[in-house]
Image (cartoon, rainbow, N blue to C red):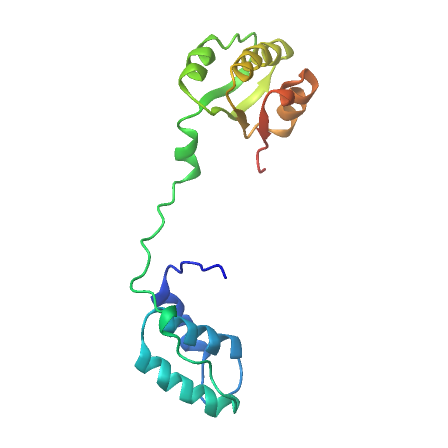
Length: 176
């Protein structure tokens, strides 16, 4: 049986408490979740009191206390990284791109794997530049590196499809 780590146990407990009313047999799932939460937190006294209230409210036996279910402490919070920070490590292409050769992309690709190309700020790209980008990224792909193009607009993504860039790079479309 797989286990999950639960963050924000205090907040969850407060939310569940607001939904649980002794004598009103509603929100049974909330009752069961609160009992489970009491076990995880090692709150035997609270669990026992709530188990009695559960039995009175639903007229059935409550779940049993299981010592092995107790978790000593709340897990450390996850460190979430904003999407903008993820893109700071990418090779960024901006604006209207005409006649670009992407020579500096070769140096970036040599130092990075995967090779992330951020196209979120590209407004237009001519066919010649798309072909040059394809040539550079084909060489990069042949060297065994993963290539990811992030957030091109739909028109740019279609241009990449036409020139064959999707054969050498994973294209992660813009969300808008």
